[in-house]
Length: 500
Image (cartoon, rainbow, N blue to C red):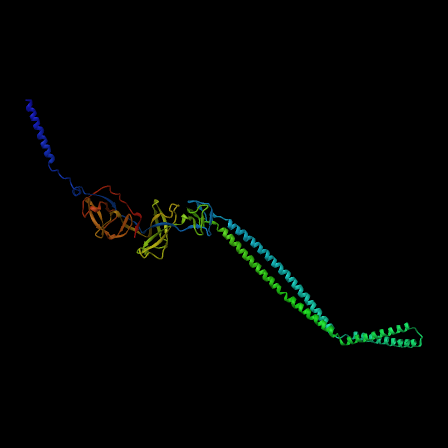
């Protein structure tokens, strides 16, 4: 009995195993395909609403941030750096001394130039004094020569002029008196001569009478000669002497006047001394300028962006020592295609974004459109002035800008994620009742990163739900299943920027 039960149990186990093995080997029913799932429940999609709003037409540019006001600080003369007063990030004002070169040689040259100027002033003072003395001496010599010449001419005139009638009368009276004395002395002489012969007088008495006679005779001759001189005028010797004195006085006057040229020489000395003063002054100014070149000053206000030299370092003329940048003058320089250049004008508003501040939009304006572009890319550089950066935007950053060229008011806006292009035609899928979609071709007017402005004849209206996610799997009249639809935007939308 027990043996029969065991056999039966074994048979049941074997049969059960065979049945299980056969079931495992039987072909499985395949799972439903994606198309089968979509055909039963619809293609999963997300939607967004068509709205009415303002579309700003923009031109997008990218480029680097630069600073319009920046300066590379360098010395005008070579030298050894003595001090550097600022480091990277320090604020400096225009005219602030950032570095100083060694000044020993410059100070020595300045002292030498100052001494040279003082010496030149001294020489000028001496030249002026000499000129005054020479003028005084020359004027006195001329006056003295004039007086001597006039006196010589007067003496010559006196010598040449005959005596006056009174002088001639006196001379004649003297002749008559001398003649009377002579006659008296002659009679006395003859009488004493006879008395001496007669022995009546002594020889000594005769000698006295003879001497008186000779004297009277000499006086008479002298009176006659004097009368002759008075009648004839001066003697030839006196006239010649007087004329010689006049000639000498004239020559002295000419010499005195000729010596007046010394005044011109002294004036030339003054001119040369003044030129020397100007030259010394120029040398002093140059020395001061050379000393000023040892001070490296910032020509602008800003921040020190780099420090390129340290104390003790020898730098050449023009070698950069530091760089200063004014962060308030930063601008974006980007390129605009020649096809969009006609839409760009100076003064147009620009929204600027930088990766360093992704949540901020900086307002700017088109400051300059460069007159020449690249012959390779056919792009034209444009400079965008950024109004307020709060010192967040710095040179070297990458930036994007949207130049606002105009605004389309109250236009039909479609989310850009809903637009698809197939075979050159742009279209959207519009959600229909009973969870189907309708393919709608559209006419794109403008677009940006988020929205597309479509023409009024595109068959869309405000409030239509368009497919934004899953549209690549759709065809006209496809069944869809809306998942997490985006909320519809009611009423006019705010300004939306478009990319031209």
